[in-house]
Amino acid sequence: MIAAETKKKNTSADAFNVEGHLKSSGYSGALSSTSGAATIKKPLSFKRKAYINTMTILMWICAMVTCALVVFILAYVLYKGIPNISWNFVSTSPSYLSGNIGILPDILNTVYIVLASLIIVLPLGVGAAVYLTEYSTNKKLAGIIEYAAETLSGIPSIIYGLVGMLCFCQFMGLKTSLMAGALTLVIMNLPTIMRTAQESLKTVPQSYREGAFGLGAGKWRVIRTVVLPNCIDGIITGCILATGRIIGESAALLFTAGFAHALNGVVKGLQSAGATLTVALYVYAKEQGEFGVAFGIAAILVILTLILNVAARLVGAYFKKKRA
Amino acid sequence: MNRHKLETVVHGIFLIMGLITIACVLLITIYLVIAGIPAIREIGIVDFLFGEEWASTAAEPKFGILPFILTSIYGTAGAMLIGVPIGFMTAVFTAKVAPFKVRMIIEEAVSLLAGIPSVVYGLVGMLVLVPGIRELFDIPDGASLFAAIIVLAIMTLPSIINVSLTALEAVPKEYEEASLALGATEIETYFRVSVPAAKSGIAAAVVLGVGRAIGEAMAVMMVSGNAPNMPSLFESVRFLTTAVASEMSYSSGLQRQALFSIALVLFMFIMMINAALNFLMKRDKEN
Image 1 (cartoon, rainbow over the protein chains, first blue to last red):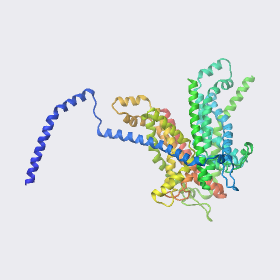
Image 2: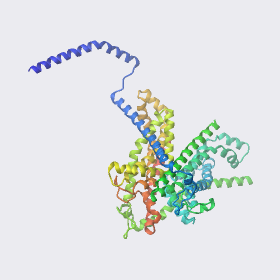
Image 3: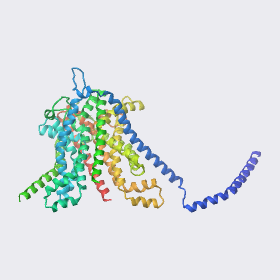
Image 4: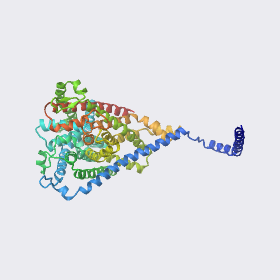
């Protein structure tokens, strides 16, 4: 009973307090509401504020995760790999007798396969791009060619490896050799070269062609002297991209180029089996458990990736400046 | 007259170069079909596709690839579950919110991520992820579907980010300005106006990621353990791609033919994904 009474007293006191508070703040409240009307700014509802904040935070987190992943992978590979790289490591062949592990043959194989693939794929890819942008009048055929290129770029490398093995190694009798590997990579990189060449062919102004035609040049002459020299940047960019893909490729080479570590010259090297750096990395890590060697190769691969990235950027910037 | 002849010849040469891409696609299709059909015929298509056991070297060999098919599907779905939200958010951030310098850093990071060879992902996964999973979940071997999912999620990030970034950039400025003028804040505008306007492109990004994930072989081979089990998150599993890669070097006879049939199944999946991708890209262009 007494408790209830005191409670009542309290609440009435509270009510009084609130009323007093309202009275004292009423004036300023009216003032703030008028100033709000002047700028027509309604505060965002709690729901909208929560939505905006969550999305902003999520976006920052995701972008940071992406960057952190890159930094971690690069740092980890370099930290683990660089101590394993020595002059002996990159300049000798592996020998079971002395237990020495060197990756010179693998480096050379990679260089051979990159060169052989590029020499074949460049004319094919650029030629296809020239056909599509300069010659093709049949829209249907052009559509089919572009669809074919898109299909090629979506096919996984392991399937290229199988078909390369069936077609080049067995049917064409190249056996397991770097040449068979290079031919497989030619098919794989055809769409890359084609697309970059096509993009840059499109940027050559139509007036250049018209000017040359007006002077009486034939179509081939126009292409040779006006169009192709003006799309050299696209071709170089395509080469850099293709080089990156070839260096990084492994599944397509496993069954076409094999995994021998013999030291050969260019001609003999292309005819015989050999592991590129990536295939060698796979074999050392998965089959032989030589993780130190694998990390050494991985560090070299990562450094090459960095260099190619910078090169692509520089080439792009250089030609953009030249054009402007 | 002579010049006319030259022009015709050159035209012909370029036409042939253009046709080579079509020839390559036909070559791959024909080779895979010819090499893949015999084993399917011998095993029976139902037993092959829906058989739950793969024992290619047993005395009484069994060639059921359902475990591989399901592993590939689950693995890809899992990778998308992790990769798509991260990639999508990063793309929106990079396209719309990030200051110029931050944007440059992210673009550089993404292009590096795309450039790192898959065996390097496999190696890092093998030595960081696999032992990590083993200790974190207290299981005997960390080489599992879960490890493969994480590696695939990371490897598909660049495709997802790059393609959705391009789609988001192509959204007309007027859409966003109209939304801002109606009182939406910037963040609301990006997610409720820009993203729906770019949805075909973003869908294409996801499909491209699916294609990359389902086709990846080497990195997955190094972290997934490679036992032909039915898929389970913390068990050693084998994908369609790794099934081909792991037995090819020592296979013979029907086993070898069955491997080609697996490749044919994988190829069918990829062709379907390509068709979907092409459809979405076209619709994005039309918009």
